[in-house]
Amino acid sequence: MENKINDLFEYRKLPFLLSFLGKKERKSLMPKLVKIQEKIYNLDGYLEQNWKLKPKKLSKYWKAINNSIAKLGYDHDQIEKMTSHIKRYELHESQLRSYKLPTRISLEYFYYYKSCDVRLLREIIYDKYKNDDNVIKLSDWRIYDLVTEINDDIEDVFEDQKTINCNYYLISILEEGVEEAEKKYSLFLNVLLKRSITKFSKSKQPDIIKLHYYTVKRIRQTLALLTKQNSLISNKKSIKKTELSKYFEF
Image (cartoon, rainbow, N blue to C red):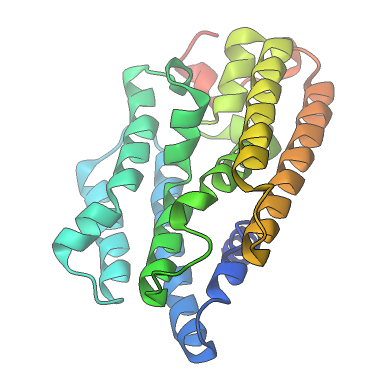
């Protein structure tokens, strides 16, 4: 799991964000962020492997998440607020058990909440930085985080066939077919590209320029990955029987 978390941090540019802190603060904060992400992944793993969710099990995973955040000095009310988006995304995952698919909601809404874990870590870093003059605001990461979450779903389209996973891309293919799913994702990624250009391209601030560069790069990589994965899938029938197929008729 350590490698998985390190890869996540690198891909989401958390080291870049942590560079705003002093060396001592970075050294102290990093292992705590890793521990929080580890506890969130443990909850994810339980959701992916179990159709019937047990409240006592969920409570155990949430206690571990909350305790890992509390070690940074946050109180109960603060933690409740900080984890509200994780709970919302957990609801999306658990609603599969009520036969509610994520494709009933928009791509942007879904992926905004899917990026909840990374957004929590960013929030903690910004809180520790405590600088009102930040060039990059927490909200400026929204486009980048949407793109990287989309990339995850596309990258994991084969792996997620084996789990009870709320992979919007995979479910779109199962419902609509490869071509329609590709059109939908390509259109949205290009909307995000235009949004990043409009928001950031005229900035003279070096850190904003970097964020825009990272975002455009990720969008282009994700569009290329979308084409590659769709060519491998080619049509709906070529996807192996998925774990979700045990519970849904696509």
